[in-house]
Length: 313
Image 1 (tube, rainbow, N blue to C red):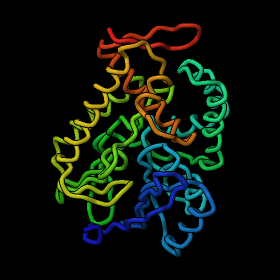
Image 2 (image 1 turned 180 degrees about the vertical axis):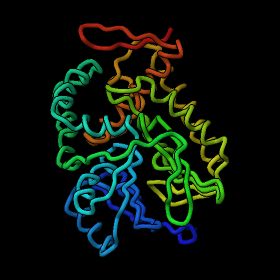
Image 3 (image 1 turned 30 degrees about the horizontal axis):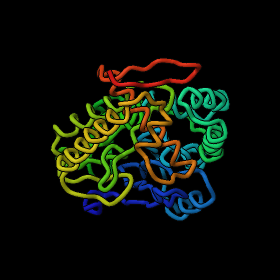
């Protein structure tokens, strides 16, 4: 199917449990388009060197600012001279989230979440470790507009804003072939991480569920995700994801029978060994579910000695 669409999938290995990201190349009228870039490391740079060869790269489309998608964007732009496009929301996040000024605020955020000092220092250090993996930062040449059309391979795709996994994430949809390039919005085997990262949208899970409904209305037949293999039937997967979050919200509400910190709730919800990297995502996801319940009026949050404490209403 990808061949028929004129799209090449470029699998880039990642040094995490989520062990790869799918980036894409597609030939257009005046040159080649790349979708997402991977991390800026030796392996990724070497892989793109092989894949690009003598091809002329004119456009680099970034679906969202997370390092496995955004990290090598600046390097690819410098290498190819390509025009870089992404949403203004995620461009701002990408250009600020990995700066020392923001990273220095993380220990105070982790303290408010009830994370022990030693673990907080490890988590803040893990975040800072991404700085070289996203630098040099790109110059953003174009900000996506909702509904604008972009040429990807043989077909034209509509840019669809799907906030949730990140505040400014986009998918690309072609109605003629009923194909969705879903980025990290819909994945075939795992639930995309929906986290509050102490900046931006303070209720990302609500945004994500709204975005799922937006994509459900398309009833896309063929889905090309950024992790995992392409699959058929977007709406059946959307139903599974909505069920997953409904169940997770029930579990989170159950945890709040007793007053809990973010970290305390996280330990109960993720009752298994986690690496420092995984703990960052677990805390962010726990916080997103707690904040969804708070915005829905199902729990309360109070500050006690500099620490947030949640309890059911």
